[in-house]
Each structure stands twice: as structure tokens, then as C-alpha cells.
Image (tube, rainbow, N blue to C red; front, side):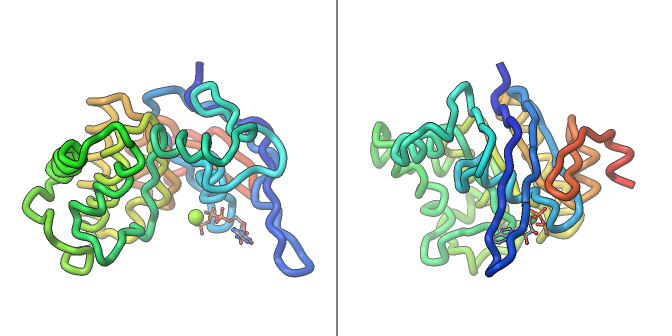
Length: 232
Ligand SMILES: Nc1ncnc2c1ncn2[C@@H]1O[C@H](COP(=O)(O)OP(=O)(O)OP(=O)(O)O)[C@@H](O)[C@H]1O
Ligand SMILES: [Mg+2]
């Protein structure tokens, strides 16, 4: 069974009197353990699709199944639980909380997992900070970290909940090429070691090259692409 199954998803955004058709009948399946990139021009609908798969936004039409669960049929509490336990999000702009330390930022989504004690939360957050090479920066707040280090915290944070699926919206867009490469290698290592599924949106040829499957989004429609085609 596919981990993610998207069928005929349409999404229209109202913009004053006009509207924008952001997704125009998107269908795809993503197998567990995939390392998948979605490329395509600005405004083609990549972020919209990730947000809908990640249950941050909802489709107007069509269905989204995550791990066999039809998310459109879920009530808000069930959806929040699904999101907290099975899905991790890495945002392009990191979305770290400025008043919290690196460790507290990683610990934050674990508050939702009531079965974890305070000590377990701390230990787990620290473990994932170490995984991303920031064990020695646990007490730093985001403004006391470099851009690449902030992105590492933003990667450690969703991983700490041990999700089945990580959605990463242009995770390398704010990083120099070398740091982007390190972050990609880190995510690929986690994908290979744990089988965690990754879906990226990207404009970065490095991401397209490392992905084991590449989709191309144009005008709200999705097509399978070969890596060489999309990177050129
Ligand atoms: N909240 C919103 N309200 C109105 N229009 C929106 C909204 N979010 C996105 N759109 C529109 O939907 C379309 C798809 O946007 P989306 O953010 O998914 O594109 P994208 O492929 O992620 O682009 P980029 O590569 O620039 O990040 C665009 O035309 C955008 O202007
Ligand atoms: Mg986007």
C-alpha cells in the first residue's frame, strides 16, 4: 500500500473577485521509503500540494490518503493527532520559535505526545540535535545560530517525533550550495537508515539529482520526470 495516495486533487484560492486554480487535478502515489522531489516553476502549486498532503490545508475536490487514512473525512482532533505523530514539516523559512533555545524548539512538537515524560522529551530532543550535529548548540536561540544551523534545527524538530513522512518545502533554498549539500546528505542518511519517507519541493538541481524519484509540476498539474530532464 502506498504511504501517500493523492487522487484528482483540485484547489482554488480566492483572490478578491478573481481566483487562482493552484492544483488542477493532481494524482500520484508515494511508496514508503521514497526520497522524492517535486520540481516546477514558481507558482505552479508545489507548496500547495505539500500543505494539503501535510494536512495544513485542505483540498476542494479529490482525496488524500495517508497511510490508508482518508484525511478529508477526519475531524480536526484526529487530523491534529495524525499530523503530530506521522508527519513532519520542514519549512523554507525554518519557522523556529525565536524565544526558545535549539533544544526547546526540537522538544516543542513532542509536547503533543502525552505518553512521553519530561525527561524522555528532553533526551529525545537532545538525541536529534546530536544527529544533525548541533549537540553543542542546544542552548542557543535561533538568532545565535547560522542559517545552516537553523535549518538543521528545523530538520531535527520533525524527526524527533519519528514521523513516517517528512515534507520539506524548499529545504535548501536559503542555504549556500555546500551547506545545502550537507543538509541533503543528512536527510538521505536518515531516509536510508530509518526508511522515513521524504517529499521535497525544490528549484535546486542538487535536490533533483539526489532524489530517487522526480515529479514535475506545471500549472497545477503533476507529471513524472526523469532527473536529467528536470535538472536541465
Ligand atoms: N493563500 C493563498 N491565497 C491566494 N492564492 C494563493 C495562496 N497560496 C498560493 N496561492 C496561489 O496559488 C498558486 C500556487 O502557489 P504555490 O505556493 O503552491 O506555488 P509554488 O509552486 O510553491 O511556488 P514557489 O516555487 O514560488 O514556492 C500561485 O499562483 C499562488 O499565487
Ligand atoms: Mg512554494
